[in-house]
Image 1 (tube, helix red, strand yellow):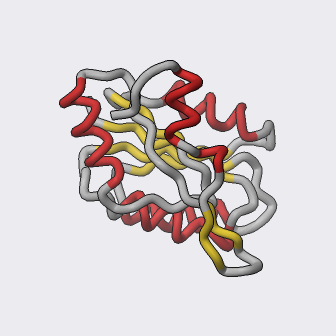
Image 2 (image 1 turned 120 degrees about the vertical axis):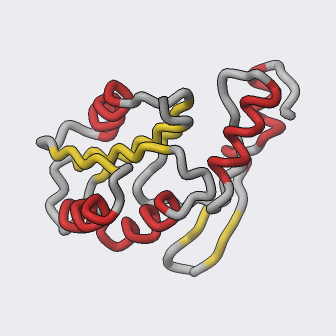
Length: 148
């Protein structure tokens, strides 16, 4: 069993997809599977996915008619074989140590899931910003648990 299954639903993101995939294939945690579901993208996303899959045996690419983000995500989740599951949007990037740190923390604390902070990027202004939507304190209050 692989340690982490990464599921990436893909739709019309050719301008961001290489950065996303680079951040996953270069993770310091190597024992991962990468499941990309192209949800009928009208752009060149499928070509980029196939290019990466040809170079990385951990990657599986599925193409399906457009059914929406949730349908693509659910299909990927149904295929996942990892001990843990990481759902990633195809226009996001991840610190290269993120999966290793999350996996180690989950194992150390014997928890079912790990949440970590997200930082937003605004393309038109080329700036990063934080938002209350991804606040760890807000999430902890909602779950009535302490964030560790």
